[in-house]
Length: 393
Image (tube, rainbow, N blue to C red):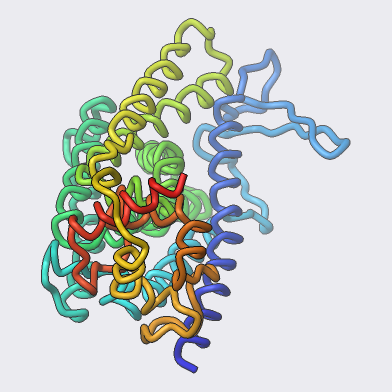
């Protein structure tokens, strides 16, 4: 019954997280694109910075952006905030259900650091909170006035966090925490900076005072951070399905390359939306391509664990019975599963041949399986299993 409840909570929270996340990301991308599409016109309302003409759904829209805000605000002013809040809340709840609830299976790897579930969870919560304060402190420091210096500092902060997490958690646990940390930066930017600053501007206008333009500058800076971090954080959030990322010995370096790729693609789109000459930003896609090529080379399988002398069927089955069947059996004995994950049963040589590519990816070319290496599968076991699987071609 516990596994049944856990599975349904996981499914519903994942669904909710996707729904509100799509809403937040869509809103973020739209407003950045809108801001970049603003143009000065010969005739504009006083106080307006620029306007944009848009077409969608068979209709035309005329949008104006004020430097600070109009003299009189309507009572039906629309605020965009709950998409961000709910994305973080559902994401953290999913972290609890998937990783905290099953910490020994998904979060802890004794070969990396021998932690108790309480210790692993405490490190998680404290690191997410501490990471935000460090990030916020950098943004509020004099470095926050220098766009290039600030970007470098944030890149270094995320990469250092990735290095730290890979020294503490399992591969899955490490990269999901990089995503959770960056997602925390983004959500608290909205909750703690962007919306409060906008509310201060609104309150000043209602009181008949002149709002501080610095409030708008800071809010726009954090909004731009969110825009550039969106693509990398999305990949971190789905990284659990790809052991070539999570269980790579230099996973932190892959995080760095993902940050470069995401930033380059986002910058290309932003400058294109702004109408800049293509020649001024065309370099971004080749730069992202170089980062992608580096990631491909870094993750290419060496084959060292999948070749060797002939291995008997009985040896391969003994290895899978010892290290795989607890989860991937017709009736799993592992407490976290009522049925084999993804319906993959590994009890016969026919099963092994059928799922050979997955077994190679998860247990031979990487050490993603068994979960947290609970059964102590050795490199020798992986090499023999790989040799047997390759001999079936």
